[in-house]
Figure 1: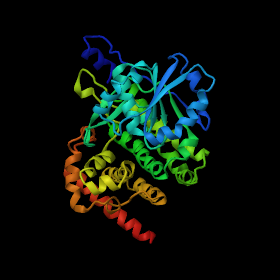
Figure 2: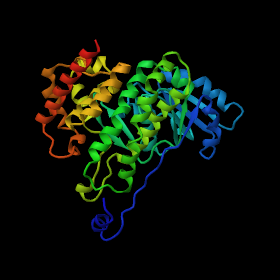
Figure 3: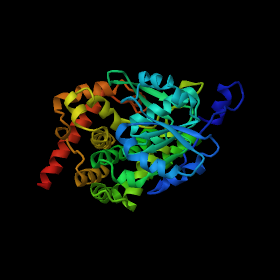
Figure 4: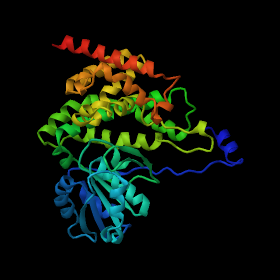
Length: 387
């Protein structure tokens, strides 16, 4: 939004808004920084997270806090999904109410639960990702599901975690498949943000997000294959570190800058955080075999190819075909259990989500259908040449 519009829309005054930036520690022994980083927020912390995640992190956390003034009072399972039912359950627990701060440990759904809980009860919180599969640990947005596991809504939070601790040893010991899917999801960030921002009146905050987005793809292509090998062998390395920083921090910063901001005039609102690649995912989630047998980032990586086709970036699409194939990400519909007959339903669902509103030009379901089918055809031709 331009300054002129801000003035007009707010009675002649410049608008005020807050932007809280994530901070982080990374390394095999980064948990040793916890006492210093948290020193101003109290003496007690409750850990909330996934069962496996807490099992992995607990010895490291206790060792890091030994001899410090900070005490962990309990380890609590987050409930199994990021939904308001689990958030209310945790909110009612005395262990949560009495703790000075909360440590959110685990993957995206566990961390999103903690973020939304602490936003509602106004309690300091810190995040400890045990997977490099998404950027949830340092974003101010949560994905909320219904009690039956279906998508409900996004929760827009006042601020991200006060600090994120990325233990690369734990990341290296995480499931390779989730690390792989995280690469697929992060692959979408640059292409979606730059595409959705096209021809927009970019002011400071979303402009900063767009520029940062341009740093997302290169590390994935440069370090991704070797990082997957290191994860397979549970070896903490520079490759693991660079991919973890890309997936968790770089894409997280971009998300914080490009997620929807409410402005007085709706035409000045923006949501440039994701676009057509995620639209493919939303549509694909309608089909149980795809949704149950294939991971979010895996499906999104095929969506990246569809976006590049839609936007006629064929040279870049070829590069991503090569990259996807090199690490086993999909190049065709069949690889994610979809068929040509499923595509109209995918496009119809895509046209109903917020991302569709910010697609440049005048998007139509017909054009999107064609892009998906053309991608599938090109993917089959590409793979045929690799046999």
